[in-house]
Length: 574
Image 1 (cartoon, helix red, strand yellow):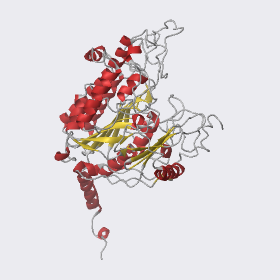
Image 2 (cartoon, rainbow, N blue to C red; image 1 turned 90 degrees about the vertical axis):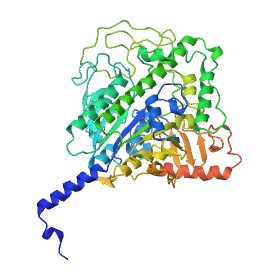
Image 3 (spheres, rainbow, N blue to C red; image 1 turned 120 degrees about the vertical axis):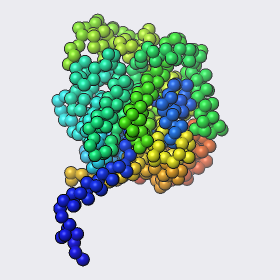
Image 4 (cartoon, one colour; image 1 turned 180 degrees about the horizontal axis):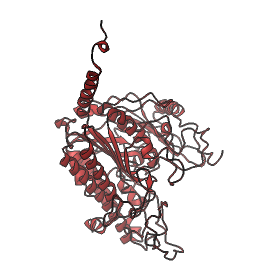
């Protein structure tokens, strides 16, 4: 047989390649992954909330909602898992991006993405995608202009980036604010100068700027991947007055009324079973000393989520304007459960005097700044109503318990309150119309997002990059659900964070508490998640064989996935 290359001219190969590439790109959807920060399972309208989220609700009504989707209980590990499609330890971030771990002993705790993983952006680029990101990065341990930037967004596959390298900060003067590879301030950014700077708006506005730039500059109809990582509603409670005012009177009666209303709505929506018992109430409203302050905290929290939804609306409006809306897959999820941390809730002691204003190019690198950019001291505690730029306060455990309705525990823990998140998927061209508004009850996890993006984006997940063996993906594509078919998961889902551990295998879950300082863990609890997802009835004593089987599964996974050895009980020891 004559070889094709012996008689086909070289220019014809070029034509075939260009034509095939164009057809291939035309068949690929755009992909947007939206992640919010420190929000509970019931904090958006279509998952039971009284908070106004009409954009997300509309995406849910015209797409799919997953009732049993999971994150990893904490910001850094979730971002590592979402970006890499691996369990966080496999990507090198088994804990946070700060610490004093001996990497030679604890390879799963490297405080930054390792070279054995690839981000979604790195995997999609060879398939023809242009890649953008706005918002919170938080998967590297260097936030200063000096030092290595090997794990900054531009170095991990993103063509353009606007956002924060670190994990939290003021919404009026974000810590480690960055454009591409350059740290900036809200005052010296040459490309974005709004009349009033508010970080949630900046994340949304710059996402829209990237979409418009892509639409104007793309010459071959190549698809885009956009990762939008909002910091709403992570502390501090910062919001704009007009958004706070929307929630006047809503929270005046305290925690219990809101929890009960959310529980009723969750049952009505079919997101939880009517037979499940509510987890224990945290806080007694009758004993609260600073009721007006607590009410205002929750009003600001709601306003932060409301504003995030308004900015998601800007993104969807831009997609419609460019004609990209129908063939864009939009994912929305949250990085962990509601946050019980008490940052800024204690009364101020020795508040400093005002200082001179910061110069426009003076970088803000403090997660908890002592001063505003104009030199005012930042205030805390129940004497200060949150919301303004000179305040820094968290909404606290009792409201986090409301956010996590109806589940147990919070961010940090791997009981359901710490790891349960909404997942909305919207894609008019890819999700069958008869699936719109439906619920998928398959237990799923962040590791499935990369697998789904590789699947729908027609990308190839590499085995090796630059001489480094790349860890195979443990997740499964969720695309089967888009056509009403069953998602095929053959292995359990696993967790470990700060020695808190869990396994979800079908309807069964084992979970236990751990302590960082000692590495000691409590006995495994066992729950039937079909009958009791709120984890109120421990069945471990009734099914010891099942507990042992699942414990063995966890042990095997932990040994194979760089979870063990872990540093708990060895912190600071090298």
